[in-house]
Length: 244
Image (tube, rainbow, N blue to C red; front, side, top):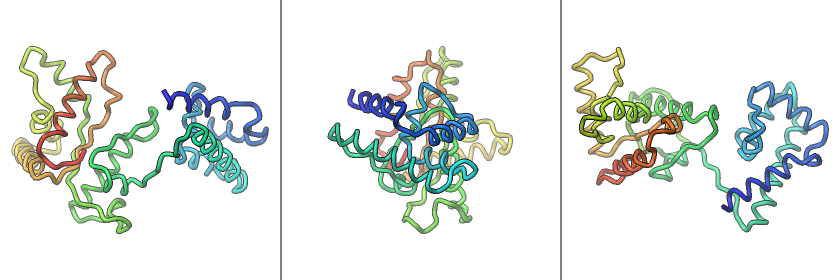
């Protein structure tokens, strides 16, 4: 409930007539329209995300340095004042390398199109490159990061398979991962798929993997998401030390 109240306070103040001056409002509107990101119902939530605002204000064709800094400071001060009023501290922000090192499990949240899938694929690609001892953007020496084998699971495919095989015995998420190592990719033959399944199972047991469940918001609304979350939690609670 507190979060809802804070969002409403931020929304009322941000969208009030006197928060941005006429020049700032005109330029912000132009920048948002150019990015095709205007949604009257959720635009205020985007302003609460520092990274989104930074990208928006980095358009040098619209904002000069002083204008961008002034807008950032206004929004930052607004967030600070609302949080202090509600006796809360601002959420700490982490670089992706820090979050990966500090937390065993974490969830990437965001509006549709905000980059959740892009970030997931970025993680998988760079961790795979590190496993192949190739140059990458994750293991750059800035932070110590334990190497893990990345496994990207489009979770909606698991839900689709359960729906297609309703009359059969329900398969666990672990079984699904084992039986679908390549998701029918044409880059692998049957022998390679079997080898990959065995490799994935060994890696899960050893604990040197990062499992990324992607696309939970793409699971149809009519599906029982609570049961799906139970299945994910069951996998996470197994006596195996792996990240997700």
